Image (cartoon, rainbow, N blue to C red):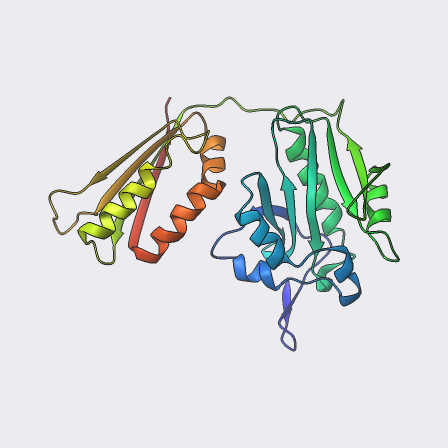
Length: 268
């Protein structure tokens, strides 16, 4: 991969490895700046709007689409494990990186994820009809029109029945330990951080237990707060990391922390 110095656009080969990655403080602004071509604006909402919706919808599953180490697009799933129909809510590839096959591979990875989810029997998507609409793109990926129209958007579906679920590796319980040092470890700051962390108990299904402790020695090598969380598996811990309730607490902690270290270990 190289960079065009004139417009700071990464030059990416079609063979780049495509991956779906969580939206974090490190890539948020980059994802917000991604844009489709101006004549495509009518077909997809801006990423700023999508991310705002995701912040208030616990079932949203937003991901940045990467080609190698460059963010090239955005995808968001409505991830409701209690229904057999999952919904591809948003999909966009920045105008600079279109026609390289990245959208196709991103959707294929999304389908693999949906197939692994509970009760999944179909993936739905809707589109605004018109010249250059994504209808033909979805048709090539075996989506078919349902005849339904919601708020002016035509609905398509992809039948997932009979698809092989990804092989699941044996899981082992995982313990996640974090030590935190605060910029200004006042009693008020420590109490607020402790309360926010403890409040996660019972609000995130994957979180089996949580323990928060404050340092009492205050030695030169001490950290201020210890967090111990336990999960049934590494995958559960990763879902906990992405959960909106945890992300909200993490955003606060990042504003007050000076340093943190972590250890994650599985039980044998």
